[in-house]
Length: 280
Image: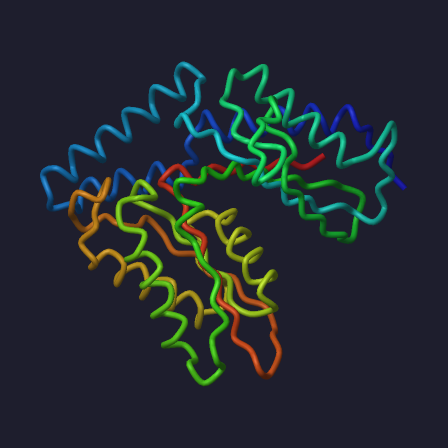
């Protein structure tokens, strides 16, 4: 049994939320530069150059890449041989979010109640998903999710007979309907299977995987590539001003499901697709 203090968890989360908001991940940076080389639209190339320059400034000055610093989603893998000491892990994670956002001078975007819209004043609470795994480590992944793109996602309960084509049609339809709203070029997370809520979670988990890695199942890896190609043929382009760089990547995660169901969820993320991970 290994002891991990709540203070360590809080400090780790505070560091992660700042890193995620300040520093563009290398896979995204490379994809943007590659898109700049491929983009045929003059306006699209100008937009991509501005996006890259903005990320460079954010990294050098350690300021937020975007004014919308998101609502924090935390994927917490807890080793079953870990003992949390000094408090409650959920409180420790939220204390880390509060500390990171306050000390990082980042926007507070969370309200206490969805209808009575009073701001919580420190960007808490986070949305936390726990997974108990073997071992004596804690792995924390933070995904600060902006809602300009979050609002463009969707979940659909397809009939099993709609199969692969139905899934592809729904993903493309969702991106097409989003148009310029999620600040393209975008990253598309797709969750297939489980239940309605599980599919939605899978679509978030998909965004935590680098776009330079494919699904380990070739069937889904091929589907990722096909969807990316078709999305980039929609003509939405950077900032929705036209071009071939509508999406930087499509990541798919799947899970077993009921014989009568085919749940599909699509989470759209702006080009930043903030995420940072640490092991304690």
